[in-house]
Amino acid sequence: MSTKLGQTPSQTLGPFFAMRIATGGENILPVPDGAERVVISGRIFDGDGIHVEDALVETWQANPAGRYRHPDDISDRSLDEDFTGFARAKTEFETGVYRVETVKPGRVPDPEGEPQSPHISMIIQARGMLNPLFTRLYFSDEPDANDHDMVLASVPAERRSTLIAQLVSGSDPKEYRFDVRLQGDGETVFFDV
Amino acid sequence: MTEPIVRHYGPRAYPDHPPFRYPEYKSTIKRSPDHDLLSIIATLSETTGPGPVWAEITEEDADLTTNAGTGSPAIGERIIVTGHVLDEHGNGVPDTILEIWQSNSAGRYAHWRESNNNAPLDPNFIGVGQCRTDAEGGYKFTSIRPGPYPWGNNPNAWRPSHIHFSVLGPALGTRLVTQMYFEGDPLLRLDSIYNSAPEHSRERMVADYDHDVTVEGWATGWRWNIVIRGEESMLEEAE
Image 1: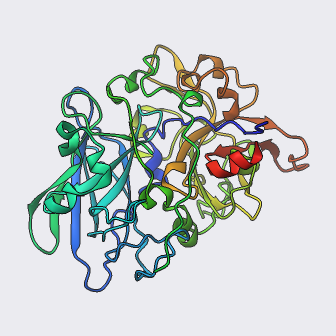
Image 2: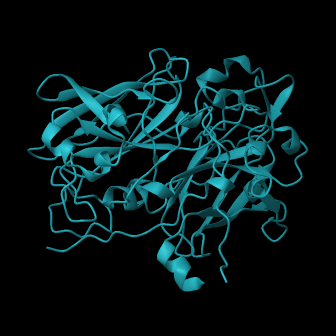
């Protein structure tokens, strides 16, 4: 017989999380030698198309070699000691824009051992959100790798574009736009992680 | 080549959590998805997460009565809040960071958006802290009891006293942000955020007064455990 304990219910983080979370600099990750710098920015939109002025965006990613800074990733790919892979950004109150400065992640194996396309996991929370929403960000300039990614393939074709960050400018860093739509037309795909 | 460990976590128990859309809490109406969540085959991207590395780089700062650094204590009813972070199987979750934020004893947050709240600020209270769980998952904060405060969700609405808690846990999917409430608070039954959690699970967010935690002449004691997702394989072994 199961003696399972019940999970503590989730609650909204409210409008004041930035007192502690996503304080200055948590949205900027150090750049390992030789890594490809990328900047991700965008806005979070509600069901009326209004930007969410108080969202928390958290990102989790592998390093350029495709290794996670985590005790379960014991692969022999190289680890960058200073690169945590974890960034936290808040959307700006006036503009609704969040910004994460990081590096392009390498390819991480899927459970079949095939390389996944480069991607960044994202957790979105805000006032008015009682649970976190989980999504993934892929890169528009990786069309071939995206075509062979196991997780993207599991997404209905007509919704895949909601997971693709669009290259908008630059080479160092490359800048990508990734908007998230919480509801309605073009709603972003969210995963039951 | 050494293969990574891909653990299997049990599901986020959505029936125990609030719905995404809970109209009594008005802000959820436009900030909740229309589509169902899409199932995902968990990969290393989901079964790893930022919790362990965050615990490496975050310093403990668990006394909110003094961490404003002014040399004077915060004003309010001094409290000790302690308990464990557990997984669903009752195992302590060690070495994970709890981050908390709260209003002051008058019910005001030290945040610029609080300009409409005419409750006083306390220059000796910043209302944020963090601590690392010990080898058994135990944690302990010292703070002041946050005051209730008015908000605009419905007429004459007041949030019950609460402390925001954030936990990363071992994996991406163990992320939990919740609120801790206080046993006996009469505002609980009127609060649309507290009541957004199902009736059968909402009391899990309520800390119990614990006289064994209370320190004579110093602070009242409150005990509260947080339960996050655990590994599924361990559940099967337990059954």
